[in-house]
Length: 380
Image (tube, rainbow, N blue to C red):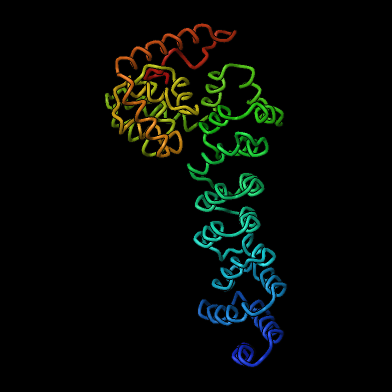
Protein backbone atom coordinates (compact mmCIF):
# COMPACT_ATOMS: atom_id res chain seq x y z
CA UNK A 1 0.00 0.00 0.00
CA UNK A 2 2.90 2.38 0.68
CA UNK A 3 4.10 1.84 -2.89
CA UNK A 4 0.64 2.69 -4.16
CA UNK A 5 0.49 5.88 -2.10
CA UNK A 6 3.98 6.83 -3.24
CA UNK A 7 3.00 6.66 -6.88
CA UNK A 8 -0.44 8.18 -6.47
CA UNK A 9 0.99 11.12 -4.53
CA UNK A 10 2.99 12.00 -7.62
CA UNK A 11 -0.20 12.57 -9.60
CA UNK A 12 -0.93 16.17 -8.67
CA UNK A 13 2.68 17.11 -9.23
CA UNK A 14 2.71 15.34 -12.59
CA UNK A 15 -0.45 17.15 -13.74
CA UNK A 16 0.55 20.59 -12.55
CA UNK A 17 4.29 20.94 -12.90
CA UNK A 18 5.75 18.49 -15.37
CA UNK A 19 5.78 18.01 -19.11
CA UNK A 20 3.61 15.55 -21.01
CA UNK A 21 6.51 13.08 -21.19
CA UNK A 22 6.62 12.99 -17.40
CA UNK A 23 2.85 12.45 -17.26
CA UNK A 24 3.21 9.51 -19.64
CA UNK A 25 5.85 7.99 -17.39
CA UNK A 26 3.62 8.51 -14.35
CA UNK A 27 0.74 6.80 -16.17
CA UNK A 28 3.01 3.91 -17.07
CA UNK A 29 4.05 3.45 -13.44
CA UNK A 30 0.44 3.61 -12.21
CA UNK A 31 -0.63 1.12 -14.86
CA UNK A 32 2.11 -1.29 -13.87
CA UNK A 33 1.16 -0.88 -10.22
CA UNK A 34 -2.45 -1.71 -11.05
CA UNK A 35 -1.58 -4.71 -13.19
CA UNK A 36 0.78 -6.04 -10.55
CA UNK A 37 -2.08 -6.87 -8.21
CA UNK A 38 -5.27 -6.18 -10.20
CA UNK A 39 -7.11 -9.20 -8.82
CA UNK A 40 -6.60 -7.98 -5.25
CA UNK A 41 -8.18 -4.55 -5.62
CA UNK A 42 -11.72 -3.86 -4.49
CA UNK A 43 -14.05 -1.54 -6.42
CA UNK A 44 -13.13 1.46 -4.26
CA UNK A 45 -9.45 1.04 -5.03
CA UNK A 46 -10.17 0.43 -8.71
CA UNK A 47 -12.20 3.63 -8.69
CA UNK A 48 -9.16 5.52 -7.40
CA UNK A 49 -6.98 4.15 -10.19
CA UNK A 50 -9.76 4.96 -12.65
CA UNK A 51 -9.87 8.58 -11.58
CA UNK A 52 -6.17 9.26 -11.79
CA UNK A 53 -5.59 7.33 -15.01
CA UNK A 54 -8.43 9.12 -16.81
CA UNK A 55 -6.94 12.46 -15.75
CA UNK A 56 -3.58 11.47 -17.20
CA UNK A 57 -4.54 9.69 -20.39
CA UNK A 58 -6.01 12.66 -22.21
CA UNK A 59 -2.69 14.50 -22.20
CA UNK A 60 -0.50 11.88 -23.83
CA UNK A 61 0.17 10.91 -27.43
CA UNK A 62 -1.77 8.16 -29.20
CA UNK A 63 1.12 5.68 -29.31
CA UNK A 64 1.25 5.71 -25.51
CA UNK A 65 -2.53 5.38 -25.29
CA UNK A 66 -2.35 2.41 -27.65
CA UNK A 67 0.15 0.66 -25.37
CA UNK A 68 -2.11 1.32 -22.40
CA UNK A 69 -5.13 -0.04 -24.29
CA UNK A 70 -3.34 -3.25 -25.20
CA UNK A 71 -2.21 -3.78 -21.61
CA UNK A 72 -5.69 -3.32 -20.13
CA UNK A 73 -7.92 -4.72 -22.89
CA UNK A 74 -8.31 -8.20 -21.41
CA UNK A 75 -8.20 -7.32 -17.69
CA UNK A 76 -11.56 -8.39 -16.16
CA UNK A 77 -11.68 -5.55 -13.62
CA UNK A 78 -9.90 -2.80 -15.56
CA UNK A 79 -10.93 0.74 -14.59
CA UNK A 80 -14.37 1.11 -16.19
CA UNK A 81 -14.39 4.83 -17.05
CA UNK A 82 -10.89 4.59 -18.49
CA UNK A 83 -11.93 1.69 -20.72
CA UNK A 84 -14.94 3.61 -22.02
CA UNK A 85 -12.68 6.54 -22.78
CA UNK A 86 -10.20 4.34 -24.63
CA UNK A 87 -13.04 2.61 -26.53
CA UNK A 88 -14.21 5.98 -27.83
CA UNK A 89 -10.74 7.13 -28.87
CA UNK A 90 -10.65 8.39 -32.46
CA UNK A 91 -7.41 6.49 -33.07
CA UNK A 92 -8.38 2.91 -33.98
CA UNK A 93 -5.03 1.60 -32.72
CA UNK A 94 -6.16 2.78 -29.28
CA UNK A 95 -9.85 1.89 -29.44
CA UNK A 96 -9.51 -1.38 -31.36
CA UNK A 97 -8.09 -3.72 -28.70
CA UNK A 98 -10.55 -2.43 -26.11
CA UNK A 99 -13.60 -2.68 -28.40
CA UNK A 100 -12.65 -6.20 -29.42
CA UNK A 101 -11.65 -7.64 -26.04
CA UNK A 102 -12.58 -5.61 -22.98
CA UNK A 103 -15.19 -7.25 -20.72
CA UNK A 104 -15.70 -3.88 -19.00
CA UNK A 105 -17.69 -2.40 -21.89
CA UNK A 106 -21.45 -2.68 -21.49
CA UNK A 107 -24.00 -2.74 -24.31
CA UNK A 108 -24.83 0.94 -23.89
CA UNK A 109 -21.19 1.87 -24.52
CA UNK A 110 -20.90 -0.47 -27.50
CA UNK A 111 -24.15 0.79 -29.05
CA UNK A 112 -23.12 4.42 -28.57
CA UNK A 113 -19.74 3.76 -30.14
CA UNK A 114 -21.19 1.78 -33.05
CA UNK A 115 -23.71 4.55 -33.71
CA UNK A 116 -21.16 7.32 -34.14
CA UNK A 117 -17.65 5.92 -34.65
CA UNK A 118 -15.74 4.89 -37.78
CA UNK A 119 -16.09 1.65 -39.73
CA UNK A 120 -12.82 0.55 -38.14
CA UNK A 121 -14.41 0.86 -34.72
CA UNK A 122 -17.45 -1.11 -35.90
CA UNK A 123 -15.20 -3.83 -37.30
CA UNK A 124 -13.42 -4.11 -33.94
CA UNK A 125 -16.78 -4.52 -32.15
CA UNK A 126 -17.87 -7.17 -34.67
CA UNK A 127 -14.93 -9.33 -33.55
CA UNK A 128 -15.92 -9.55 -29.87
CA UNK A 129 -16.40 -13.05 -28.52
CA UNK A 130 -20.03 -12.28 -27.69
CA UNK A 131 -22.27 -9.55 -29.14
CA UNK A 132 -25.84 -8.86 -28.05
CA UNK A 133 -28.73 -8.24 -30.42
CA UNK A 134 -28.85 -4.56 -29.45
CA UNK A 135 -25.30 -4.15 -30.72
CA UNK A 136 -25.61 -6.30 -33.84
CA UNK A 137 -28.66 -4.27 -34.89
CA UNK A 138 -26.41 -1.23 -35.24
CA UNK A 139 -23.55 -3.17 -36.83
CA UNK A 140 -25.78 -4.65 -39.53
CA UNK A 141 -27.60 -1.41 -40.23
CA UNK A 142 -24.64 1.00 -40.19
CA UNK A 143 -21.64 -1.19 -40.92
CA UNK A 144 -20.07 -1.55 -44.34
CA UNK A 145 -19.76 -4.90 -46.12
CA UNK A 146 -16.67 -5.94 -44.15
CA UNK A 147 -18.41 -5.22 -40.85
CA UNK A 148 -21.58 -7.06 -41.90
CA UNK A 149 -19.57 -10.12 -42.98
CA UNK A 150 -17.51 -10.17 -39.77
CA UNK A 151 -20.67 -9.89 -37.69
CA UNK A 152 -22.58 -12.65 -39.46
CA UNK A 153 -19.52 -14.94 -39.32
CA UNK A 154 -19.16 -14.39 -35.56
CA UNK A 155 -20.58 -17.44 -33.78
CA UNK A 156 -20.99 -15.36 -30.61
CA UNK A 157 -23.23 -12.77 -32.27
CA UNK A 158 -26.94 -12.72 -31.46
CA UNK A 159 -29.45 -11.13 -33.85
CA UNK A 160 -32.88 -9.66 -33.25
CA UNK A 161 -35.91 -10.10 -35.51
CA UNK A 162 -35.03 -6.79 -37.15
CA UNK A 163 -31.40 -7.87 -37.45
CA UNK A 164 -32.44 -11.01 -39.31
CA UNK A 165 -34.56 -8.93 -41.68
CA UNK A 166 -31.71 -6.51 -42.36
CA UNK A 167 -29.29 -9.39 -43.02
CA UNK A 168 -31.63 -10.92 -45.59
CA UNK A 169 -32.16 -7.54 -47.23
CA UNK A 170 -28.41 -6.94 -47.51
CA UNK A 171 -27.83 -10.48 -48.78
CA UNK A 172 -29.99 -10.13 -51.88
CA UNK A 173 -27.07 -9.13 -54.09
CA UNK A 174 -24.11 -10.18 -51.94
CA UNK A 175 -23.18 -13.84 -52.33
CA UNK A 176 -20.63 -13.88 -49.48
CA UNK A 177 -23.06 -12.32 -47.02
CA UNK A 178 -25.87 -14.59 -48.22
CA UNK A 179 -23.69 -17.64 -47.61
CA UNK A 180 -22.87 -16.36 -44.13
CA UNK A 181 -26.57 -15.95 -43.37
CA UNK A 182 -27.43 -19.35 -44.82
CA UNK A 183 -24.89 -21.24 -42.75
CA UNK A 184 -25.84 -19.72 -39.38
CA UNK A 185 -27.81 -22.06 -37.12
CA UNK A 186 -29.87 -19.28 -35.54
CA UNK A 187 -31.43 -17.75 -38.66
CA UNK A 188 -35.21 -18.45 -38.57
CA UNK A 189 -36.50 -20.84 -41.20
CA UNK A 190 -38.81 -18.27 -42.80
CA UNK A 191 -35.88 -15.88 -43.28
CA UNK A 192 -34.04 -18.59 -45.24
CA UNK A 193 -37.08 -18.96 -47.46
CA UNK A 194 -37.25 -15.20 -47.84
CA UNK A 195 -33.56 -15.09 -48.75
CA UNK A 196 -34.13 -17.44 -51.66
CA UNK A 197 -37.21 -15.54 -52.72
CA UNK A 198 -35.36 -12.24 -53.06
CA UNK A 199 -31.80 -13.37 -53.91
CA UNK A 200 -30.30 -12.73 -57.32
CA UNK A 201 -29.38 -15.65 -59.57
CA UNK A 202 -25.69 -14.97 -58.87
CA UNK A 203 -26.30 -15.34 -55.14
CA UNK A 204 -28.22 -18.56 -55.69
CA UNK A 205 -25.37 -20.00 -57.73
CA UNK A 206 -22.95 -19.08 -54.97
CA UNK A 207 -25.07 -20.85 -52.39
CA UNK A 208 -25.43 -23.86 -54.65
CA UNK A 209 -21.62 -24.12 -54.74
CA UNK A 210 -21.36 -24.27 -50.94
CA UNK A 211 -20.16 -27.47 -49.30
CA UNK A 212 -21.91 -30.00 -47.11
CA UNK A 213 -25.53 -29.95 -46.10
CA UNK A 214 -26.05 -26.45 -47.43
CA UNK A 215 -25.15 -27.65 -50.94
CA UNK A 216 -27.71 -30.44 -50.85
CA UNK A 217 -30.48 -28.21 -49.53
CA UNK A 218 -29.79 -25.51 -52.09
CA UNK A 219 -29.63 -27.95 -54.98
CA UNK A 220 -32.89 -29.53 -53.86
CA UNK A 221 -34.51 -26.15 -53.93
CA UNK A 222 -33.14 -25.18 -57.32
CA UNK A 223 -33.99 -28.52 -58.94
CA UNK A 224 -37.43 -29.08 -57.38
CA UNK A 225 -40.49 -26.98 -56.80
CA UNK A 226 -40.34 -24.40 -54.05
CA UNK A 227 -43.08 -26.20 -52.13
CA UNK A 228 -40.95 -29.33 -51.89
CA UNK A 229 -38.05 -27.37 -50.43
CA UNK A 230 -40.32 -25.67 -47.92
CA UNK A 231 -41.73 -29.01 -46.83
CA UNK A 232 -38.17 -30.36 -46.42
CA UNK A 233 -37.01 -27.67 -44.03
CA UNK A 234 -40.33 -27.58 -42.18
CA UNK A 235 -39.84 -31.29 -41.46
CA UNK A 236 -36.40 -30.49 -40.01
CA UNK A 237 -37.75 -27.70 -37.81
CA UNK A 238 -38.64 -28.52 -34.21
CA UNK A 239 -40.14 -25.05 -33.80
CA UNK A 240 -42.51 -25.65 -36.71
CA UNK A 241 -43.61 -29.03 -35.38
CA UNK A 242 -44.40 -27.51 -32.00
CA UNK A 243 -46.27 -24.61 -33.62
CA UNK A 244 -48.24 -27.06 -35.72
CA UNK A 245 -49.35 -29.04 -32.67
CA UNK A 246 -50.21 -25.92 -30.67
CA UNK A 247 -52.32 -24.24 -33.35
CA UNK A 248 -54.04 -27.49 -34.32
CA UNK A 249 -55.11 -27.94 -30.69
CA UNK A 250 -56.48 -24.38 -30.58
CA UNK A 251 -58.34 -25.05 -33.83
CA UNK A 252 -59.87 -28.29 -32.56
CA UNK A 253 -61.05 -26.46 -29.45
CA UNK A 254 -62.85 -23.91 -31.62
CA UNK A 255 -60.70 -21.01 -30.43
CA UNK A 256 -58.77 -20.23 -33.62
CA UNK A 257 -60.09 -16.88 -34.78
CA UNK A 258 -58.98 -13.43 -35.89
CA UNK A 259 -58.01 -12.40 -32.37
CA UNK A 260 -55.77 -15.45 -32.00
CA UNK A 261 -54.05 -14.80 -35.33
CA UNK A 262 -53.42 -11.19 -34.33
CA UNK A 263 -51.94 -12.42 -31.05
CA UNK A 264 -49.58 -14.79 -32.90
CA UNK A 265 -48.47 -12.06 -35.30
CA UNK A 266 -48.05 -9.42 -32.60
CA UNK A 267 -45.69 -11.71 -30.66
CA UNK A 268 -43.61 -12.47 -33.80
CA UNK A 269 -44.74 -16.11 -33.80
CA UNK A 270 -44.18 -16.69 -37.51
CA UNK A 271 -44.84 -20.45 -37.65
CA UNK A 272 -48.00 -20.18 -35.55
CA UNK A 273 -49.29 -17.35 -37.76
CA UNK A 274 -48.65 -19.34 -40.95
CA UNK A 275 -50.35 -22.49 -39.63
CA UNK A 276 -53.32 -20.45 -38.38
CA UNK A 277 -53.73 -18.74 -41.77
CA UNK A 278 -53.55 -22.11 -43.50
CA UNK A 279 -56.26 -23.59 -41.30
CA UNK A 280 -58.58 -20.61 -41.59
CA UNK A 281 -58.06 -20.25 -45.34
CA UNK A 282 -58.18 -24.03 -45.93
CA UNK A 283 -54.90 -23.90 -47.83
CA UNK A 284 -51.68 -25.91 -47.58
CA UNK A 285 -49.17 -24.49 -45.13
CA UNK A 286 -46.67 -23.97 -47.95
CA UNK A 287 -49.01 -21.65 -49.85
CA UNK A 288 -49.45 -19.41 -46.82
CA UNK A 289 -45.77 -19.57 -46.01
CA UNK A 290 -44.85 -18.44 -49.53
CA UNK A 291 -47.33 -15.59 -49.22
CA UNK A 292 -45.60 -14.48 -46.02
CA UNK A 293 -42.05 -14.53 -47.38
CA UNK A 294 -42.43 -13.19 -50.91
CA UNK A 295 -41.51 -9.51 -51.39
CA UNK A 296 -44.98 -8.29 -52.39
CA UNK A 297 -47.80 -8.19 -49.80
CA UNK A 298 -50.83 -8.61 -52.09
CA UNK A 299 -51.41 -12.30 -51.40
CA UNK A 300 -51.40 -11.77 -47.63
CA UNK A 301 -53.94 -8.96 -48.08
CA UNK A 302 -56.09 -11.25 -50.25
CA UNK A 303 -56.03 -14.03 -47.64
CA UNK A 304 -56.87 -11.63 -44.83
CA UNK A 305 -59.75 -10.08 -46.79
CA UNK A 306 -61.14 -13.50 -47.78
CA UNK A 307 -61.00 -14.82 -44.21
CA UNK A 308 -62.69 -11.65 -42.98
CA UNK A 309 -59.90 -10.01 -40.98
CA UNK A 310 -60.02 -6.37 -39.98
CA UNK A 311 -57.35 -3.93 -41.15
CA UNK A 312 -55.85 -3.93 -37.65
CA UNK A 313 -55.21 -7.68 -37.80
CA UNK A 314 -54.05 -7.53 -41.42
CA UNK A 315 -51.59 -4.77 -40.57
CA UNK A 316 -50.19 -6.81 -37.67
CA UNK A 317 -49.64 -9.81 -39.95
CA UNK A 318 -47.98 -7.60 -42.57
CA UNK A 319 -45.63 -6.19 -39.93
CA UNK A 320 -44.54 -9.73 -39.10
CA UNK A 321 -43.33 -10.08 -42.70
CA UNK A 322 -40.88 -7.18 -42.29
CA UNK A 323 -40.61 -3.42 -41.93
CA UNK A 324 -43.92 -1.71 -42.82
CA UNK A 325 -42.79 1.79 -43.74
CA UNK A 326 -45.18 4.73 -43.90
CA UNK A 327 -45.38 4.53 -47.68
CA UNK A 328 -45.85 0.76 -47.70
CA UNK A 329 -48.46 1.05 -44.96
CA UNK A 330 -50.51 3.50 -47.00
CA UNK A 331 -50.26 1.36 -50.15
CA UNK A 332 -51.32 -1.77 -48.26
CA UNK A 333 -54.24 0.02 -46.62
CA UNK A 334 -55.38 1.29 -50.02
CA UNK A 335 -55.16 -2.23 -51.49
CA UNK A 336 -57.03 -3.69 -48.50
CA UNK A 337 -59.80 -1.10 -48.74
CA UNK A 338 -60.16 -1.51 -52.51
CA UNK A 339 -60.36 -5.31 -52.47
CA UNK A 340 -63.95 -6.46 -51.90
CA UNK A 341 -64.36 -9.48 -49.59
CA UNK A 342 -66.43 -11.33 -52.17
CA UNK A 343 -63.71 -10.87 -54.79
CA UNK A 344 -61.10 -12.07 -52.31
CA UNK A 345 -63.15 -15.19 -51.49
CA UNK A 346 -63.48 -16.09 -55.17
CA UNK A 347 -59.73 -15.65 -55.63
CA UNK A 348 -59.10 -17.83 -52.58
CA UNK A 349 -61.26 -20.57 -54.06
CA UNK A 350 -59.13 -20.43 -57.20
CA UNK A 351 -55.98 -20.74 -55.05
CA UNK A 352 -57.41 -23.83 -53.36
CA UNK A 353 -58.11 -25.48 -56.71
CA UNK A 354 -54.63 -24.64 -57.96
CA UNK A 355 -52.96 -26.05 -54.85
CA UNK A 356 -55.00 -29.27 -55.11
CA UNK A 357 -53.97 -29.66 -58.73
CA UNK A 358 -50.32 -29.13 -57.80
CA UNK A 359 -50.61 -31.71 -55.01
CA UNK A 360 -52.18 -34.44 -57.14
CA UNK A 361 -49.61 -33.81 -59.84
CA UNK A 362 -46.72 -34.11 -57.36
CA UNK A 363 -43.28 -35.62 -57.76
CA UNK A 364 -42.54 -39.19 -58.79
CA UNK A 365 -42.86 -41.59 -55.92
CA UNK A 366 -46.34 -40.50 -54.95
CA UNK A 367 -45.28 -37.75 -52.51
CA UNK A 368 -47.40 -34.62 -52.17
CA UNK A 369 -45.77 -31.38 -53.20
CA UNK A 370 -46.57 -29.64 -49.98
CA UNK A 371 -47.63 -32.01 -47.27
CA UNK A 372 -51.25 -32.56 -48.38
CA UNK A 373 -53.97 -30.66 -50.16
CA UNK A 374 -54.77 -28.35 -47.29
CA UNK A 375 -53.81 -27.65 -43.69
CA UNK A 376 -56.30 -29.67 -41.67
CA UNK A 377 -56.16 -29.72 -37.91
CA UNK A 378 -54.24 -32.97 -37.97
CA UNK A 379 -51.88 -32.39 -40.91
CA UNK A 380 -51.04 -28.72 -40.90
